[in-house]
Image 1: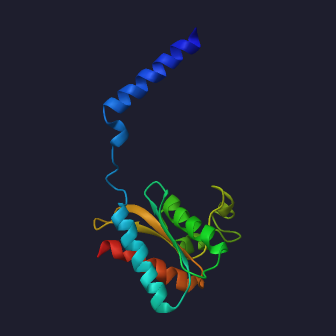
Image 2: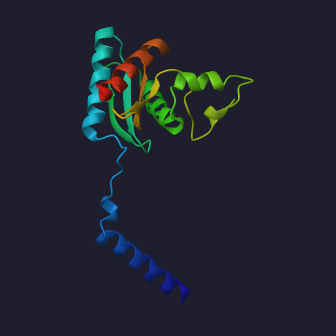
Image 3: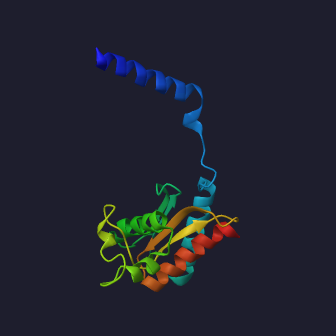
Length: 162
């Protein structure tokens, strides 16, 4: 009897949510698909100009993959790394290289990269901010040196502000 009552309550709540358009609510500080594409293409352009083959991932404010590109002949292993760099940057709202400085032996968050199904704590992941300075997503780049990855990610993140 309780199962039937619970099922009716759940059904009522779902109908209420759907009818009130709650399922269509938008987060005002989220990355749009146009912004994600703009960041991705700016990063790709920088990579091409630098002659570096990389994977580029852009995540939204919830750290969900929003845009991705694997440049021809880039490393397959860098696919996952690019995505994890973007997610890590968003999870902690920090440049992944700066996070890495805190995760060294003796650091205040040593071994944090072992959490959240694996984080990446070396350069190439950056939060993306809007013109008002609010974090709306993040970008992750992998396949070049850490300096190249960071520079390419920076080009992508800056494309949203300007």
